Length: 178
Image (cartoon, rainbow, N blue to C red; front, side, top):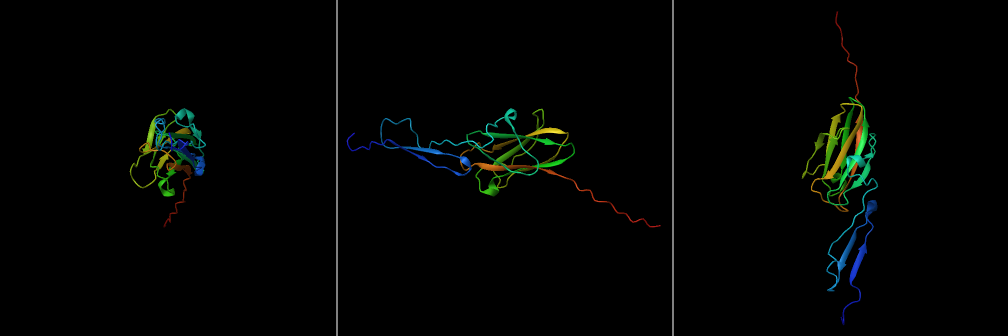
């Protein structure tokens, strides 16, 4: 081992915006470290984890406030639920590409029984999905957001917001001629 450095690995920690903490491990030339691979990384989940199933869904308001989510492991899904009024209109929107993220989000809507209702899957397009729908009943709906190709890491994040739209009824003015 003459001439070899005593240090066998370098581990670098970077604190990245949003609370992500990638760990990059790089081995130095040393036969005993076959277990240490190049580029290994660990990313922390967002503040809403665990939210990988309908049963673990977190509440999301419908006033248009944004929630920050990320895809911190391969196959990560993020679920939220929200309350609706029958006949009201809602828009579910993710912002990733427009905010500089590499995430290509897919939005899926489920009813209170867990049955698929609708979705916006624009995989591969350069636009963020926006799903608009009218509530069929008063109660709870669920939203699942996933990354189109199951990619993950510190570059794969998005903002989610759900907005209720109020219909505006204008009076009809008719001029009656006698």
